[in-house]
Image (tube, rainbow, N blue to C red; front, side, top):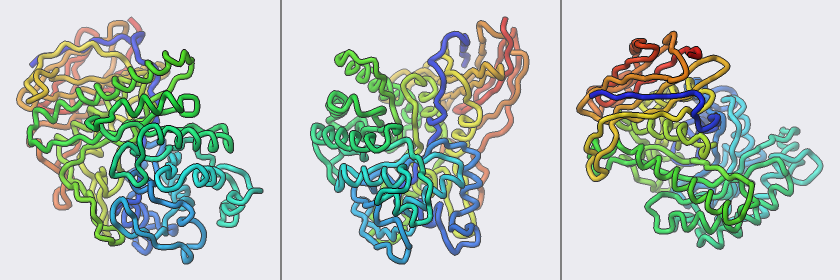
Length: 497
């Protein structure tokens, strides 16, 4: 199979926002307790933070971290998780039928973010609480001492404000499973009122309104239109969520997931543009794709009222990793629309990292995230691709090759992210940058080929991981080989023609 990719550094979708490489930490299963926070474990530091978890998350370069949920936030009172730990109540968590000890709360999260080198992205409860509690949390996090909740922060040992800039106005409020679920018009009022209060306390913050929880929900796009039309002036982002699955056990169909991811983003871009036009507004609202991942093998969400139950501990394989790569490529190609994205989640719960008391396991989906985060820099180039198609089940004929590319002008570096979605035929791909000469290949890594269901295990932790690859310079361009299926990441130094 042969394909060609043409690029031109003048044709791009604008700068990539590094926040597309964000993460998500929810009080769910063993994400917090036994995940990032495990006091008494020899692998934890003096704050109870797992050092080994921090060590493997740091290379991912996550600029933002969404917290504390997720479904959890809609019945969470943040005030339970501050102050002396001995005084913090244990509460039932409606969302995941678990016991929440509140031993890890807002101040612990802020300290953990500093250790990781990420910025907090806080969610407020607009399900069972509302505007008052949301405003109080902004006061606690962002205002200088001298008012009630800011003084409580100081009393709790944190005299300086945290300066949280990103705030989610609830979570998946379109879903009937959500505590405090309401129709779109009611949520729009809640979000608008909360945003007015929150920005009144700190005008520097940005707010993210809930979009649809998934594309198949009956209110998809109707919900967003209602929210955007009512709260347009008070919000800065609308959220999108998507979890990909291969329930049908059709790998050809599953590996074409990037087609649907593109479609979701384009749906949002079109609707945002429509509402902006109707309002004759110069304001630009962007997309926060703040829950995304593969999730279908471990769906049980009933914790049976245990503390830190084993929930949603998905085991990821090669095809899952290639779908995650397609999410990241889509975010890059749509850099003018997607400014924030958060993989859900980071540890134990549908996560690239699993822990046990004695150590951790890096899963297959960790590796594409690392490659993209490390090497996607500058502006997002618009690729022109000539590729054969393959039959992707009910999705019909789909291009076999998926490509995203970035250009860092200061470093004169082009990074290429090429995915072969065809599991039966490898591909020879020729890449030309029409206004540039590729004069040096800086590096190349490949993962793929072989067993689609191959996964890393505690006994065999390196079954699925990248290996060095070769890229041949030909006619001022490149020729590369893509395994069936596979991901190839190539970095090239370029000079103008």
